Amino acid sequence: MRRSSLVGTIPLLLLLATGEAAAHAFLDHAEPRVGNKVATPPREVTVWFTQKLEPAFSTITVTNAAGQRVDTGKTRVSGNQMSVSLRPGGAGTYHVTWHVLSVDTHTTDGNFTFQVGQ
Ligand SMILES: [Cu+2]
Image 1 (tube, rainbow, N blue to C red):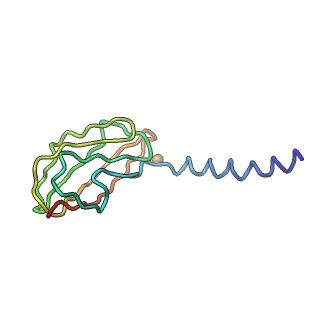
Image 2: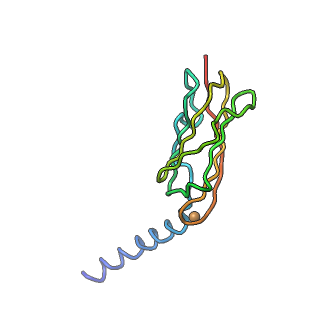
Image 3: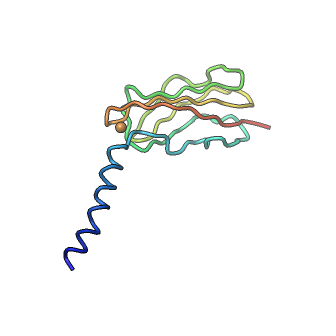
């Protein structure tokens, strides 16, 4: 009885261990949502990550359909989320680019778009 329950436990522990090792900060979700359409230009973009972030080296930049930067340049970080306020940028496709340093000292980056408009 004891032996069989131990055998069942080991694969689970291995799975948890490898899951930890691969845990960099990746994008979990965003608001506005990735690829989504919103009626009016949002006042800010917020992104949530799979790990806590180091505020000093984590940034978001946002450009509007004309390629102009519409973020204020002041990214706010709290735990595993970060936000940046936006200036009005009109309709069209917005590009969000993020760079983060997570608490495990790894950097990751990525980008996504959302639509504003009509
Ligand atoms: Cu990592």
